[in-house]
Image (cartoon, rainbow, N blue to C red; front, top):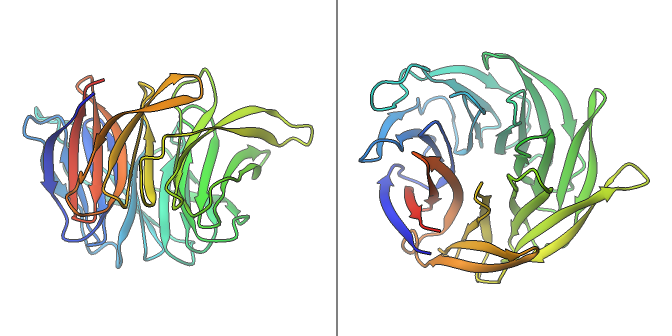
Length: 331
């Protein structure tokens, strides 16, 4: 199952931290304080816009598109979140233009490490070096935000937040080596599970897109990729989860990012420069089906995302070289 490089875009002058895609558009975030937009539908896969780099005073660490829209949130090391709106009228090339700043969200006391939208776009989650996770309620236009809850149960820096694709279930990954799962309870949010097992910082997690079962993949400084499975609701109201699998140990150093495709494949990247794709051969048993060494040359890879463009599954990666690489994957 080959991974083929379709395009390497030299977008940033410093580390590329985060990638997201929607409607054939890719957004990237970097230490150079810039956010770039790329048209994945164009035959030449080209950059189409650079957002105002004076908006954030420090690195932009995370970008996330709001589901079913072209609204983009970006979290920065300057402790703020910016929200951007793009013209919904596409030209013949499928390019969104005239991006405008809709809002600046303040509240965190330290670097914002990750932002993520809930499946319906109603909630925006953010996490920070200040050890907290914030839940924001957004209006339809993406211009007004109300903080609904500040979650402070992690004991260290929170690295990443991820929503389930069809329910209001949030996962947060932390420097404290744990993953916490959060659900809405009346007018507040509560932690329903703590996943323990990683022996180092948990950098990222991603839910399976299938609705037939509830599973989560995570990755860590301990060089492992793990799959967790929901079992049942406990007597105390908390959810019971179990470690279903530790994927084949291919990475030799920290794994920074994982992504679970609608087709059932898991991709991982990390500080060893590997891009790895795994397939489940039977329930709970996984094998490596594709591996690309030095996917960004000698540089570490910080982020990986699956994207469906023109009915094809693509892999998007970003690294310390400042490049965004677009890969085809032939299952």
